[in-house]
Length: 183
Length: 240
Image (cartoon, rainbow over all chains, first blue to last red; front, side, top):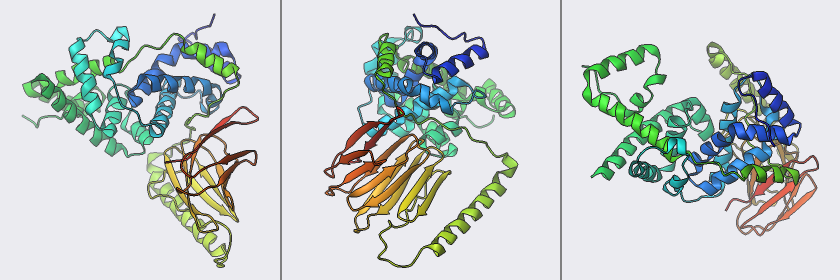
C-alpha cells in the first residue's frame, strides 16, 4: 500500500520530497501518484510515441531520488518536474528518432479529456503529426504545457523570440491543415 | 477598427499584459473574424489536450520500484537552480563577464608554450551557440569542461597523433574531464548528466571512464553503460 502526499500542505510535500531523496520507496510512489500523469503527458507531447513516453516516465522516476538533490523547495515541484520530463524526453528524442504517432495513442487518451468528437481528435492528431518537429514541440509546450517562451527557449536551445515565431507559424500551419481536412 | 490579431496572440490572450489584453478585447468586440479565430484557438487547445494526454499504465509504478530495488539509477538532466541577475544589472554583468573571459583566454594563450610537438590536445573551441555557463579550461594534457547550464555543447579536440576527435557534452552534466591518449580519449570525473563521445568513422580505440571502465569501439557504434560505486549510472554513446 502506498501513501499519497497531502497535496494541500506544503510541509507534507516537502517531507515526501525529503524522504524520496533518502530513498524511500513509499515517498517515491507518492510522488508518482501525484505527478506521474503529468510527467508522462509532457514526455508524450515531445516524443509523440506511447512506448517512448512510457520509457521516459520510468527513467524520470527511477532517477528522481538522486535528481531531487537539484530541487529547491522555494520552487514549484510540478514545474520543476515538467522541465525534467521535457529534458529527459528531448534527450531520448535526439538519441532515437522514431515516427511520431499521436493518432495511434488516441484510444489511450485520458477519459477526462477524451470527450471531444473522435473525428475532430483524429484530425488534430494527424495535423500534429504533419507539423515540422520544431514547430510541434514549441506548439505543445506552449499551448498544452503552458510553458513560457523563456522556458521553451531554454529547453530547446533557442531564443524566446524564436519560440514566439515558431508558435505563430505552428498556429498558422495547424489552421491550414485542419481546414484542408474540412474540405 | 484596429488590425486583425494573429491566432497565436488570440490563443495567448489570457497571458497578455493587462493594457494589451484590454486592447485586444476591445478589438474582439468589433471584429467577428477575430472572435471566430479565438473560438478556433480555444477549441483546438481542448482537442490538443484530448489528443496528447494518455493514460498512465497501472503497472508502471511497479516497474519503477523494481528497477530501483535492483539498484538501477538514472542520471537525469535536472536543472540546477541559479541566481538570476536583476534586469538592470544584466548588461553590466554580461559586459564584465565578457571582459573577464577575454582576459582569462588571453592569459591562457600567453601561458601556453609554442612547441607544436606537444602531445596535449588542441585548444577546444565551443560552437558559437554554446550556452552561457560553459567553462573550458585547458590544463596541461587535459581539458576540463564544466557545463553549468543546459543545452548543447560541442567541443573539438585533436588527438596527439593528429586524428580529430569530437566530444559533445549534453544535458546538465556539471563537469567532466577529457584526456586524449594514444588509444583514444579518457573521460573521467563526470559529475552528472549524459555525455556523448564521438569518434570519427574508422577509428578503433578505447575509452576509459574514470580508469574503471574500458569500452572498445569499432568506430561506428558504441553504447555502454556503467553503474558507479555510489549507484550513479553513466551512459556513453557514439554518435553515428
